[in-house]
Figure 1 (cartoon, rainbow, N blue to C red):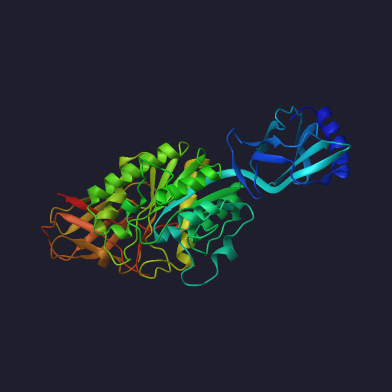
Figure 2: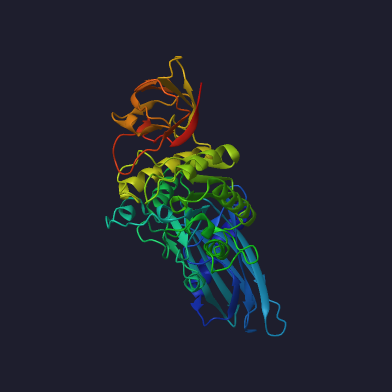
Length: 470
């Protein structure tokens, strides 16, 4: 950025140019440069490089200038003498901006013919972090109940999106605009969904960093619909290609930090092994096309949307064990579940849950007990009579809360049932109606509100289907 004395010279020179400058007809063909409202990802620590390049098309001018201000004060400046060949003079400037809740403005001037002429004036540019959301309707997470609460609660000037989540490839290709992120409209320009907006708002407010969210989810889509066309990864005829296209056009694809996946309701009839292979392919392709990805966040789907889907849910529970870069979050114990989607209260809770997880994993923030969803490790008969089962959980230190009536949602592969649940430290002890020959225990949760098993932060227990040890 230069020495203090050079900055003083800039401050003295800059107002003179601004005062003398007039707006002139376009004399520059710009090749690269910021757009209004653009978020640049931080690359070098807390800095994000911004390149401004083009060709001057009129020999009337001898110099080109770039001035960058930060919240109205001079931040950076560059100047270049022009050298014409064939009636055109190329130029390139690079400026670095800092991540934080500050705005940058970029002005490009031409000097010559006795004057200084403004050629481009772009503001509201920020530097921060980028994330992707993908899946089906609960990743779209639009305001299907018309409550109008997501934007009212969580919309922020510093929370951005790029392009449109439309499934129409022509609309995707036509929309190269930056937007303030919207949590209510679905699969449209600037839409990020209710829980995505809440998550992003918490990053902005608590981590003091601007955030770009690109949501490519489409409702009712099975996992096969999300696969990459390896012959044409950016194909606008595919869901995968449209999101990749948007990320590349936004200049984010090389610097996306995490991807959030809420999908599986449409795969209730899919064999879990087939689902696993398709997720494995997606994870490989995402890692290739978004090489800076640090973590994948998978929501275990909720009971509902017309399918039981226990096999898919158990497979999703295993993903964090199979892949070290996959983190898992539950959707049980959320309020406002309508049988498939959620009222705003549910999406808000999901956004808060996942934000805590990301703040711990990617930002090194202290994590309160209960940040991770309660996750059963083993089920064991423990008194020799086969009428009591003990569940041991991962993540020691989590307080477990069992709502009255939650025992009804345990199931055995035998006629006996669970009649009572007792919390003992990091364990649950289940009382059965009688001694049983069962070999498998499951807990599927249920549709809508009602009794749940959760931790002290209100995060619901992951559903499961596991063998019972003797």
